[in-house]
Image (cartoon, rainbow, N blue to C red; front, side, top):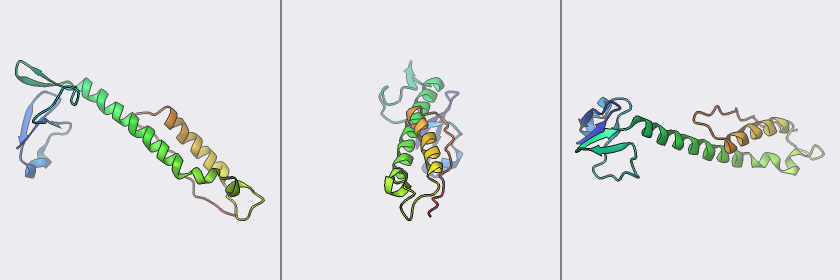
Length: 130
């Protein structure tokens, strides 16, 4: 049986086959935990308390790190669009919508530098060749 705690500090116990019954927002209470692993769970007089502000801070920090990592990945996946032999109009073939990729990469770079909790990702342009 796994125990879960919700934001109202109510403890829920469920078997693995009852996972669909777990309340939204409830989190698994680890059988052994340390405060640095779960700073949003505190033990007060033998009772586990859920700190929703601490939990939200942790989740938001994870979302910001994910935004930064995802932005870096998107930039890596479009590095090819910056290669001079791809963008040089004297070469055939060449990327004719390189300005779309510049705009896209600038938007992604802004999210890599200043990551946000709920990013709005720009749409990756479809490459067009001469």
